[in-house]
Length: 171
Image 1 (cartoon, rainbow, N blue to C red):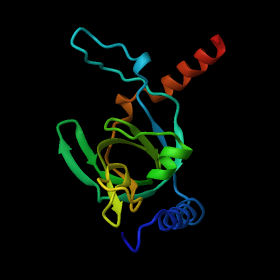
Image 2: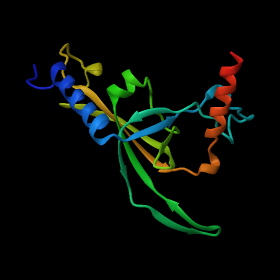
Image 3: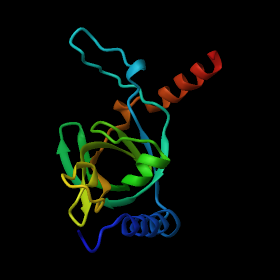
Image 4: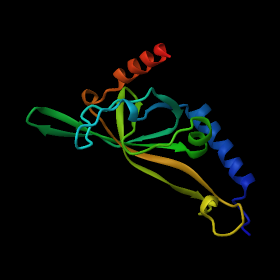
């Protein structure tokens, strides 16, 4: 039996981190999920214009990488990456949100497309959901999304909000 990492310890870590992220740091982002029912796929299952569901606002930690300026034939382009770190407990219980590759995060006037989702940050190195013994120690604690700055012209986010409002009016 482990000395640390019990459910009481995990609850303490969650409460401290929630207070830190929600009340002290206070950085909120809007997460847009792809609306599967509103997307029209072609014969090959491809979709040129994705349609997104309305945003879900959630608190997180944000870490920007330095921008890289790339010269192309049409002018200078900015290539930038960022890491968005979320508490798994907040995603699961408060927002009822599962982050996936391809989701869009709106932060600081820019849209960021999720490239990679890392969800294996365990407290005391244990995930009780996959434990092979009966003890209830450890926790799957956070979700980190690596994202790149997306072109606004390729997104169909504003249209999806209008589509959602139309659906509400039809109900």
